[in-house]
Image 1 (tube, helix red, strand yellow):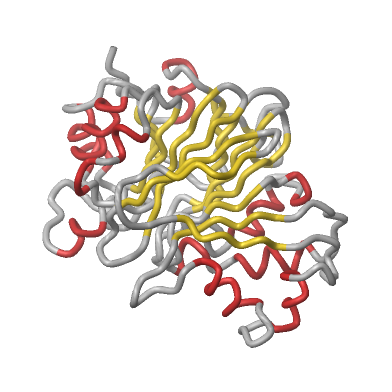
Image 2 (image 1 turned 135 degrees about the vertical axis):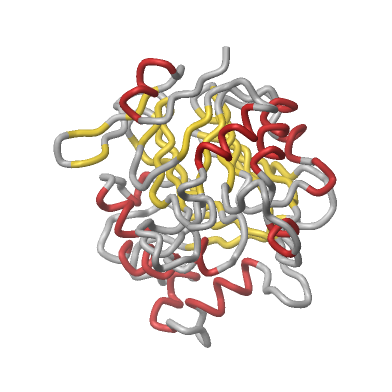
Length: 308
């Protein structure tokens, strides 16, 4: 059955999920798996939205941060997230609009009581972009932009825990799956985002699966297999169906997103990374997606929390 609802209050009754709000703001349920939208926008500073970032909750605890976009540290605090509960930070790529708040998270954690090491996973680099370990060092290493945070990379950490950055393959088509905790398991594959090293993440948590594609143009159509039978597919809705040229080398069209969702047989499609060139065109984008996909299509907004 095709779902064509367009408002949150209507979605609650017609989509096999739920979005929750408390009187003073967003609320994620105390049980089960929830996806919270810390930021639904892109790199623009005139779209009245925070940049693309997500939190995955399990039984009332925030367990995974996907992308540390500008504003995400403050949004995480507003959402009631506890940084000591986080198992890992997973970065899809290292563009500013997906990663700039990383030092803010680390500085803020100085005042908490975290003891467990924090794994930070992100793409390997190329000739134009640093790998994740180098990027972390350039930010908070001894010779980085914020050298006073360098001890977080050692066991002398003032925050009581050590950061463990790890590079994940960002070329080829092989699946990587070398991280797990008692709460979740992560896998990734490289995706095409123009010349930028980029990866998609699959999260297995609470008996469910969520796939975050990050920014991708779906060249070689690798995401559909990777996202097979996922409960939610979270994608970037950064270009309209009419996009041409360089924009299409960086981002998938709405029709392509719908096609991937159908090929993967995902239970719902969540559209994040919404930009000015796609806002106001939701009807056209929905039509293009629903020509390919018959499941629920959700347009993300800042701080919404969707239960699976």
